[in-house]
Structure formats: structure tokens, C-alpha cells
Image 1 (tube, rainbow, N blue to C red):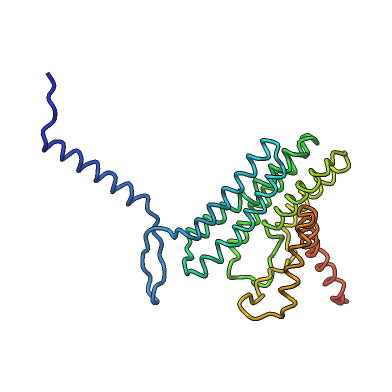
Image 2 (image 1 turned 45 degrees about the vertical axis):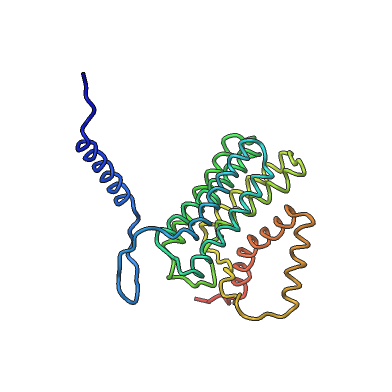
Length: 278
């Protein structure tokens, strides 16, 4: 007959299990080098608050894909805008609470790839681009690939370019104009072939603009902490009121204007620059 293990054997097994668990936790822990009081120190763990916003943005991007698969394109578009709002908060929260980290920056880029690259490409493809055949999925993939290239280039250019300008269309703005288009025209049941061609152009152009060298104003030089005239607050309130009248159309006009501003200003600067004669 088999006998139960002695108390000593049981204690040894429990001790081994605890050691294995401790080893797993230790080896899976994130370790970063950080500057504290001018000295490099190794820091274990991650900051919860900013990464919580990033995780929420990641969830919103994933939800947009699921909603599009289920045919709810309005919810899918709104989810992309929610991801955009959350993406704007995580970095600011990290700076305000002094919880910036390399892990958070990498995690944010991966979240952006889903929310502003994969999600808009799939939402537009599932909604209408698949009706165009092979050209539709090629253009959708072009958008996704350009978003990946845009994010990679942005990461390596941090600290080496003027913060006042973005080089290429920011991926959140590209995602916003695609999502707003889907939201607006899906509500209007636009199914004409000419409109499908327009969406092909829009998605493809948004992708190409992301990897272009066209400069876009970043709004990072605006002092949000300083005092502003009272009329500025009134203008912001009126802006919210106008957007609430027809959110999808107003957001499309807003981000469409921003997307067009880059090429328009580039042409304007080119015309203003006197040509040099040989």
C-alpha cells in the first residue's frame, strides 16, 4: 500500500514550489535603468497609472475590430476615438506624476499600432473596401504598414526633431479621419461605387501621408498651464456644442481640415520660397 509522505517531505515540496514561484516572478519582472539624483539605478516593476490608460486604449482598439466584425461600425468608429483620447492622456499622466519609463513608451507604441493602424484598416476594409476586391485589401494593408513605419520612425526621431512639428501625419489623426469617414458615411448608407473609390483614395492617402516628410503642427508649444482670455474658454464650449449637433460629420470636417493642412501649407511654403536661378 502507498503511504502519505511525511511532514518533512511535504514541507520540502512546498518549499520547492515557493522557490519556483519566486523564481518565475523574479525572472518575469521588468527591470529598467533609471536616473535618480544623477545616478543610474536599476528599477523593478512598472508604473500602474499611465499603463492603465494605455491598456484601456489597447482595449478600445481591439473592441473596434470586434465591433466591425459584428457589423456595428458606429461603435467601432467611436471606439477608435476613445482610444485616441486615452492615448493622449497616458503620456500626460506619466509626465504629471513623474512615472515615465521605457516600458511605458514601448507599450504605448504597440497599443498605437493596434488602435491607429490595424483597427482603422480593418474597420474600413470590413465595411466597404472588401467590396472592391483585391485592391481593397491591398489599400487597407498599405494603411496598416504605413502606420507601423510611421510609429517606428517617430520612435527613432524622438529628441532629434523640432517638437513644434510632426514629420508626417500623426497616426491618431490618420485613424481619426478614417474612423470619422466610416461613421459619417455609414450613417448615410453611402454604397455607390464612386464612394467606394473615394474611400480607397482616402485610406491610401492617409497611409502615404503618415510616412511622408510633410510637416504637421503638433500643438505642443501651447501653454496649457498659463492664463488665457475668457473668450478662449467660450470658444471651446461653442466647439463642443457644434460637435454635439452632428458628431460624426463635425469630427470628419475637423480632422479632414487638419489632414489637408499639411499638404496645403507645404505648397504655400514652396510658392513663397523664391526659386534660385543657376
